Image (cartoon, rainbow, N blue to C red):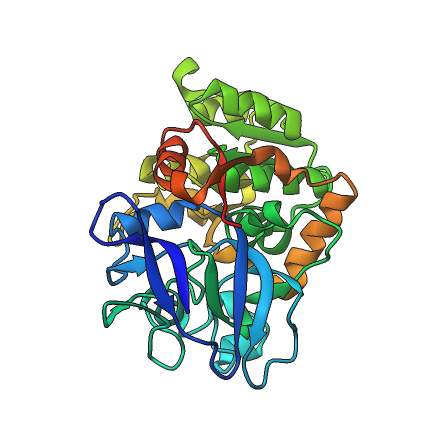
Amino acid sequence: MLTKAAVTYGKGEPFKIDTITIDEPKDGEVLVRIKAVGICHTDLIVRDQYYPVPLPAVLGHEGAGVVEKVGNGVTSVQPGDHVVLSFSSCGECAQCLSGNPYACQKFFELNFSGKMKDGTCRLHKDHQDIANFFGQSSFSQYAVASERNVVKVPKDVPLEILGPLGCGIQTGSGAVLNKLKPEEGSSIVIFGCGSVGLSALMAAKVANCTTIIAVDLQDNRLQLAKELGATHTINPKNVSNVVEEIKAITGGEGVNYSVETTSIPAVLRQAVDCLATLGKAAVIGAPPVGTEVSLDVNTILFERSLTGVLLGSGVPQLFIPKLIDLYKKGKFPFDKLIKFYTLEEINQASEDSEKGITIKPVLKVS
């Protein structure tokens, strides 16, 4: 069948709205009519080839829509169900079988190789394959996804706001709730107040952290951080030393936890240096492959630790419904991060995101 999609044809080129062909779902796959899809930092760095996904490709990995068809063997959803699309995992490796699909041994192959699990593409134009992305390619009116990508969601929440739960929002919130697991009354600093950082901040409030520090270069983002639960904010342009400012806020001890979302090595160094003894830093930001960071070994030696976080260290089918439940209870207002655009406005939305004008652009597709 034909579908309208935003296609990435060349490195760093603008997205092009085009009509392409999409295959029927195969065994274990689901055809979804996309209602709306978030634009994530990862979409933009793949467009610019920081990660070597084959081009041309249809990107988009924060899709939300309605199931149209299911392939043989699909049991978790049926036509008419509302779903969010998340990352792809094999379901067969030791990590998947132990309940850690975000650490799937085939993660890069399934999400960044441009092909589905069977090694073929579902998207085509003029007899040429167009690469799939994250097992979904949801910058499109229709997407074929593996059943493992699909998360059934309730119909009493607006579907158009739910797509970002598939990646950015679950990544930030999961870094706090699933990976760091801060104790009630603990302190935390969030470096970067984009959608991932602000999701981490809201999660810190859910976890009852009592000192929540937000660090960002844009005052409008820091103001929103305050509204969402930050007890303190720091604009690095207004202080001489961010680490010392954090230590001053915490009585000289440093924070119990930190989350780094900016992809800047110097900021990751700050996220480690500002930790109290026994403190733990989580890194989420994804710089170009090969990026290195310098740390003082003695800082780590004194019982501090640094951990990486992929997709919020959670099982989407379990974690995303929890986030929706928190939203319905008024405890996780992620909708405050969203600004809507049409699919045809994808390049404007991407530019607004990169400039910090919009925190989480969401494309309304149908």
